[in-house]
Image 1: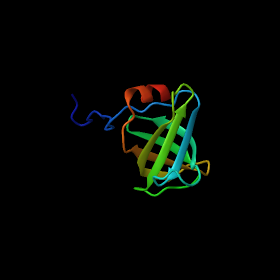
Image 2: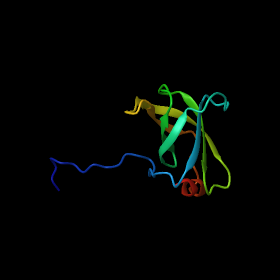
Image 3: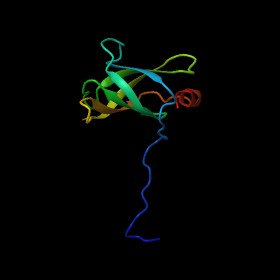
Length: 113
């Protein structure tokens, strides 16, 4: 093995996938499910987080409430999360990575992706 070019590894805790079909997403500031929906779309989902396009920027470390509902989902999945990063996107929105407080279980992950 060539020591000058170490192999890159994926440092993520879980696999990211694109959502299956149309996903209804709600992202609100705080944990009380109050305020307007900031989410425009879901870019990808993992068992431990989501990457979203938002209407407004969020602060790193800010707590948010996330609700995901897929076309084949038995019921919406609600989770609290913290903003890990947030950057402006080229279309005027904002792209953010949200780390979920509680992992999605296998069935929920499969229904959404």
